[in-house]
Every structure is written in C-alpha cells, then in structure tokens.
Amino acid sequence: MDQPQVRPGIVHEGPTRPRVLVFFHNAAQGNLAIQILTGLGVPNDRLGVTPPEGIEGGQGMILSIACPETLRKRAESACRSLGGQIHRISS
Image (cartoon, rainbow, N blue to C red; front, side, top):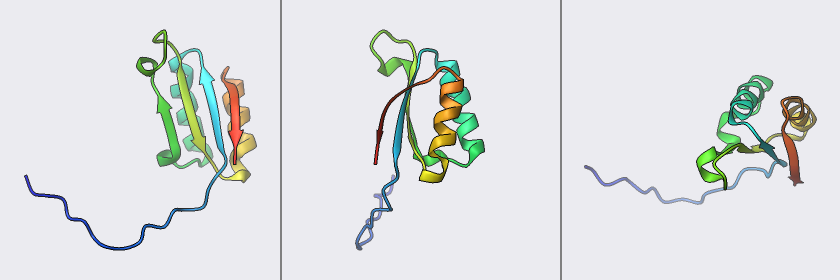
C-alpha cells in the first residue's frame, strides 16, 4: 500500500455555521430526517450522526446539523415534526 501524500499549505476553516442538535427516540425517524434535510438543501457532509450503538441504552439517534442560518428554522421544524427534541443551538 502506498503512503498517502501530504501537501504543504495552510488549511483554512470555512465559515462557522449554526449547529442544531436533535435527539430522536427512534433511529428510523432520524434516518427519515436525514433524507428530508438533504432534500431541503443541508449539505450531507455537514450532518453528524450518533447511531443507536453510540447511545447509552442502544436506542435512538442524535443528529448534529450544521446548516446555514437561512435553513435553520426549516431544519428545526422538519425535525420537530418527526418527533425530534432540539437540545442545543450554538453559533
């Protein structure tokens, strides 16, 4: 196997986006929320997922959603309509 190449240069962080954390009691609801959020325009690479295996009790799902401010209210509304509990919003 070849060694990965490291290229010199400065890594610039992108603009910080508000992050919405949502807990779903059922992982199926969380999976549906992911599909709806990507349909709304939330970039798929900006979704953080904690599956049931990573949660104490082995049930549910946590989504960490980094979305532009223009989509934040729509993302929250979509998650609430699926039974998600919004726990923290940070900038």
